[in-house]
Image (cartoon, rainbow, N blue to C red; front, top):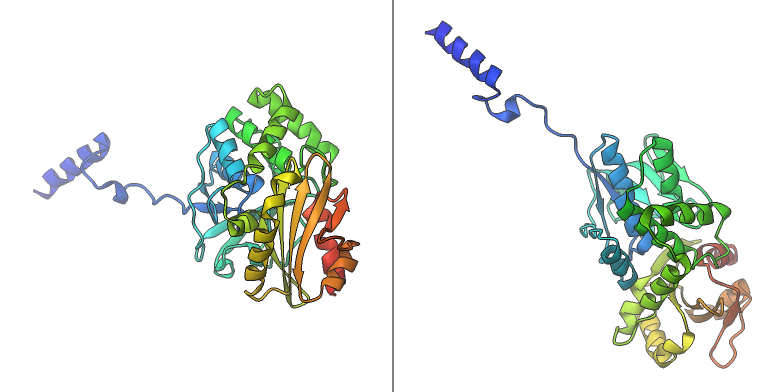
Length: 334
């Protein structure tokens, strides 16, 4: 009888049947989660998708997630290039995580200290991230995370597919404000040109303008939602500072909403902020109308070289929160 059973088992194994699959194959590796910052923008969302796809292609199963729903511009990009939005997930404890487009704890999932951070892809300054083990880090001073991700694909000799090329092109156009931001580099321009060819985009400036036209569609959107659409929180010398930005093709679009936006800022400031700044950036005029609610307006005004005139602080040439606002504030708060 034992010999008969042995023969049956041998035959079953030869045919690939007869035993549960879990006893024959190892369990698949745990997925790595790839996540961008809170209040995700196009670069953050597309970056998570692109890095997850590259890692998976290289044999490391990875999945993109988002810390919140996509904004109208990002949804337009996803729809245009037939990409799926990552699922919203804010808990990463116990998981392997790759951060994209940020390295600040206030912008990361709240339980990030309980996760295993294995990678970082970012174009901002290092924001205090600390890890217990070495990690793969791609951090360069360029205008967009997607520019760095294009480097990663090239280094791995993995072709960028058409859908991702379109999304990454849009991320670069959005983050560099169609190459008008002072953060723009020659590499951003060259990368965008290559991505446009891969995506079949013939008129890059027209695509960029379309993105900002979508961003400018604010009618009917509650002021608090607009304030939080592109909002980042920072801790500066123990004080909580929030900086939001709305980029439009014409500031006249936002004129009827100024009072409501200021009211929303006052409400949000009550959540423990020392200062809240809202950059109303005019893409065509290349400048920013700064709204401010602060415990010390003089300090912020001095940092920004601003002076309120008729309730307006116009900052000519100021387009970048990362390069032209945050560094000045951090120096002032030290």
